[in-house]
View 1: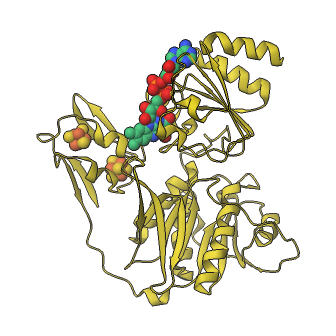
View 2 (view 1 turned 90 degrees about the vertical axis):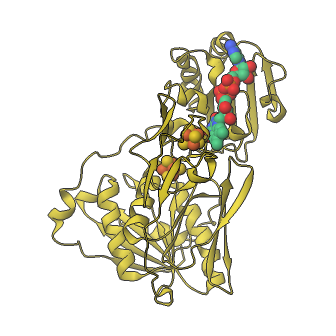
View 3 (view 1 turned 60 degrees about the vertical axis):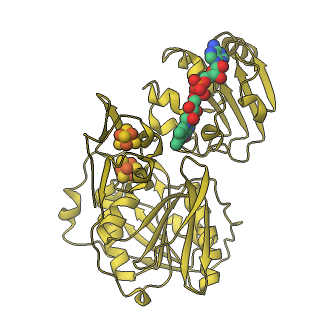
Length: 390
Ligand code: FAD
Ligand code: SF4
Ligand code: SF4
């Protein structure tokens, strides 16, 4: 596929900027421009009322879908620890597999990771494909993508599920575009149409105003990414038995190794695993003031999150954005500092026991979802809270 902006028709209305789930459109000189991180997902096309987005699909020949069977879950791990989302996906895959009368295979890539196979089986995988090599120690979407593509070609799973982590988000489109199949990003519901043996992939669309169910009828595998905390993992059962298949290292190894560049080690703060998140909105006033919220997060042993306005201002990286087009989080305590509480931000808050809001405006929408509210200037209240907690 290809995408370009027809400059003469673009009026710079920015609608497409909000629609792009990957933050891949920028307005420069009142005209939209597509950035390098565009995944060619095509989501932005409908948002433009001026037909200024020219999106061309490749013509892809249909495959014989009857050759494909089983569910693959990409078992993402970082330095020997499985990402919780992978366990959540195995649990979900298990119930989908029951509907299809098939099995769940976890694909585990990395180095010195043999101990994780049993954990994957305990959480519901029927089979684990393990590839263990030093050059798989650090995630790289090209290298991991090449390996996944080869495994999918060999094993022909009908469904592939990947966590929508920063690694998963770059891996999944690499695989789907190489295999010329469909990918639905950020699914919130997965179901099976038993009669047609299709995966029903549901995700928010059109700015979250409706839920769209997407099917991939003619190509295989059917691929989805799912955000962390959307599904719950099964209770682990360490007496469960499964097949562990140690895969041979593909040759020539050099072919893969030479692709190991730009290793992505950015994900230092794990919002997904944090019990307490202190999150900043535009009301924090400046990039410098974010340190106040960071100090509170540090005192509480929590992580720092942000609204999209703060990310768009360049005050904090995208990896910390919470909301519809950022991360979904489920800490026990969420402290929103200077965040208005827009619906797209609230969409990223799942199952939170206690929301505390600090906002100068007593009518701010955030107070409608907060359990505790402090009306006041967060730049004054944050130092007071830190002092008190210390
Ligand atoms: P503002 O709306 O500017 O609000 C600032 C708040 O701070 C106000 O309530 C104000 O009263 C308060 N304030 C001001 N000064 C102070 C002070 N000194 N002390 C305390 N409070 C103060 N947003 C997200 O967050 N995440 C997303 O993933 C996301 N995805 C989106 C997707 C789409 C398709 C669209 C259209 C929008 C999306 N947005 C998202 C943007 C969202 O609609 C809001 O614009 C955004 O959340 C607002 O951020 P904010 O609350 O920080 O800023
Ligand atoms: Fe241009 Fe269309 Fe984007 Fe508006 S929605 S900025 S007209 S490309
Ligand atoms: Fe963003 Fe997808 Fe449009 Fe690319 S095709 S600009 S990733 S919405």
